[in-house]
Image (cartoon, rainbow, N blue to C red; front, top):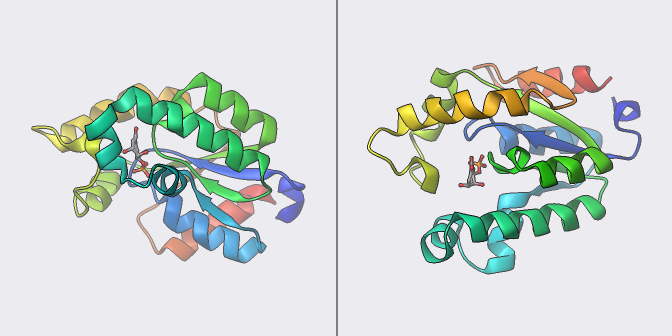
Amino acid sequence: AIAGLAGRNLILVGLMGAGKSAIGKLVAAQLGLPYIDTDHEIESAAQMSIADIFAAYGEPEFRALETRVIERVLAEGPAIVSTGGGAFINPVNRELIARSGLSLWLKADLETLWDRVKRRQTRPLLKTENPKQTLKDLMDKRYPVYAEADVIVHSRNVRKEAVMRDVLKALA
Ligand code: S3P
């Protein structure tokens, strides 16, 4: 499996609730590589939560911070890097990702995503009248872009260890 990465980063992309963080941690532990969550890096750089950054400065400022963090994190690799759901949508980020590693889309269906995000009400983009519909709209808009990832793994609604093994198989 490690041969597939050949010293490069593995960057997990996909919508909120796809399991990027949970699966990323497991894959990193298996491969003995550091695990980095770009949302977490943004929060520690700004000393604020993502929700507070959106509320205080707006989404464009968040996206600018996100690109800076992605650039830094990828340069420090190799690591297993999970990104926020919007990261891969920005062509600048896609280019940074393509140059430094392998992108992997954790693809999930609406019910699986919704099941996972509805419990945590922290995501600013889902603070809408009908968050499930918003998630569906984001799927429609973003799935054609996520499809550009180097590798696609279905984030099935099963134990995360099983999805982790699917990721390792896809890298082998
Ligand atoms: C976002 C997803 C979030 C976070 C921010 C914006 C998005 O990350 O980066 O709220 O645009 O889809 P997760 O995918 O980890 O929830």
